[in-house]
Image 1 (cartoon, helix red, strand yellow):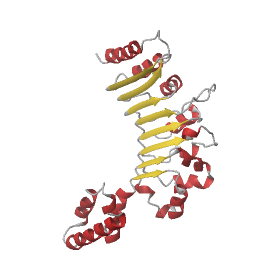
Image 2: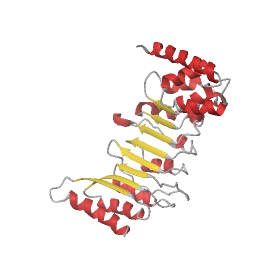
Image 3: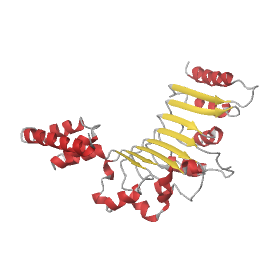
Length: 286
């Protein structure tokens, strides 16, 4: 059955339900019914067509998750559909993701005002440059603090400096979950990073698939300290000290620890490194 047929059928069903219920149920009950359809996108679209009173609640779920991928210029299409912040549905978005090929547009001046309309995003997943390994001058400054409610950040990157990454992290005061993924060897960084006077909560999950030594050093420099409850690390044979430092800093709050060690030397025992980290964690919780 084609999608138009499904929409027509759903609209017809929703129309009959709307006729039966609109005059007998209070608005809060109708909202509760629409909330139960949060995963039924076709039915939610039908609800928007059937009744104007249903549309606001249905849009809350339809626009809760937005993904921008490089297909038919999605970001430009969104900006054309909602040119004015007052009419934008960005305030419904709770999960926002950008693919690597879409992030280059973030450097445009007109996008800076537009990105600020996503003020209630709680989860941000984005790739900077991704797998093409080319640096196009994308800056993370325009993303600083764009959503004060952000709680989860997953950032994949290649040529973005650690300073830019951590300045972005510190711009979200309610940040709890953090994932850092490097798709290519990062550039050497010799300059010192001066952390801001405050840092986010960081009470959720930490996942690092990157040059652990450099990332761990900057994490440990955060003035607010580390309070992660779950840690997932990928480290090389020369980086166990950095991993142990992270574990020690979270010793009072850590509940789950997963470490993957990659060894290129036959003389280094991966199991010994993992056991050493586990021992540190267990000793801190005696």
